[in-house]
Length: 326
Image 1: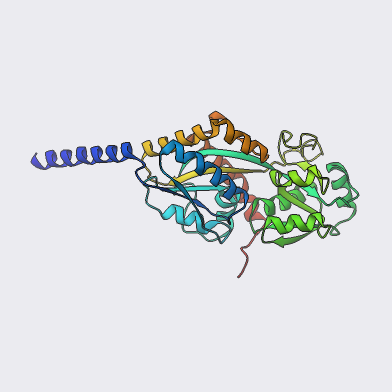
Image 2: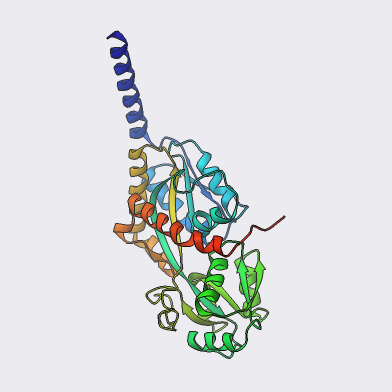
């Protein structure tokens, strides 16, 4: 009986300590791990969020760029961090879907991370150099079929959304063209504008400056609806390749086991950030679609993440994509 009383007292004390810790959270700066280089889309997004979350949480949110191995090194760091709410994992389709299907990892991306919120979406878009004879998606598919293996397409990183999108496009349209690997989006864009490469499956928001200045053509947006940034560009459904959708989405996670009330506090900070008019304008100006309020829940991110894994892992593994050898 005495042992039971002691155990009960210890459990109660533990709950009180946990509650007090969560109540005081955060009491020191937080780290936001970005698994990509500085200056890229995810880094830019992370810094926008970290600025506003500092106000919401009352503590600095420091961005840490941890790169390598298809973004899986940064995700590994996040999964191994203490589940105390002081390490955040921001990422996208490449880091939290594609990477784990290709690279050998020691974590389960669905089980070892706790979802906080979906953040933004940007569809991928098929773009090409201005000298291509095709002027829309239907003409592009017809031209590629009439000229198999003559066109070249940039791919960025093994297993990235852009890489998988290119494979997916060929499979869905019955076309064939050469792929040329690039280590980053910037050099690939430069070669496309210069006419050194024919095609690219790019995050839509990256293409805006070039489309607006007439330096490249847009053939199709890979989503069910047209993209607000360039509403004149047809969807893949409209060009005769129905169901060919792939979105470059971003989310925020914490290590598994983080207290629920801490997750709730972080989620509230995200909701507050996404409701801020200045933040919304910055994101919209970047060509990003902001997650709706009902998508800004841990449950919504968990469901979306699981569905993306279930959809894309068989496609990636079926394509026998292998990690680059150093």
